[in-house]
Length: 94
Image 1 (cartoon, rainbow, N blue to C red):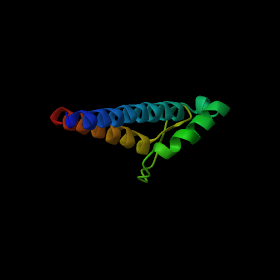
Image 2 (cartoon, rainbow, N blue to C red; image 1 turned 120 degrees about the horizontal axis):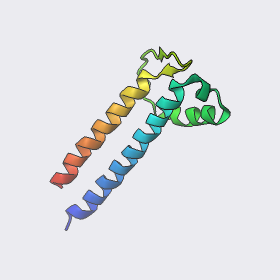
Image 3 (tube, rainbow, N blue to C red; image 1 turned 120 degrees about the vertical axis):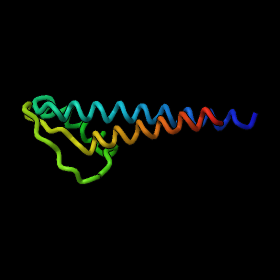
Image 4 (cartoon, rainbow, N blue to C red; image 1 turned 90 degrees about the horizontal axis):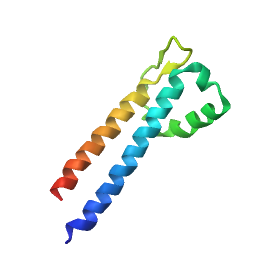
């Protein structure tokens, strides 16, 4: 019975990580297209999701669509998904 609260807590953290990964993916897509990124709502969205991006200092790549491919955001998405995967293994063992 002691493992049940731990499994629940791990599941909640996993769900939060999935939400973060989705938010980072939206950040990446909006920034990729410059015409979208220039919209007022898109600038607000990028400002809100910018704090989720790991500050790795990698240079963004300009896209042919007038935006940028945010390499830091991409690495952040991969890191969050790896963390979620590791937690799934831990939850299975709990």
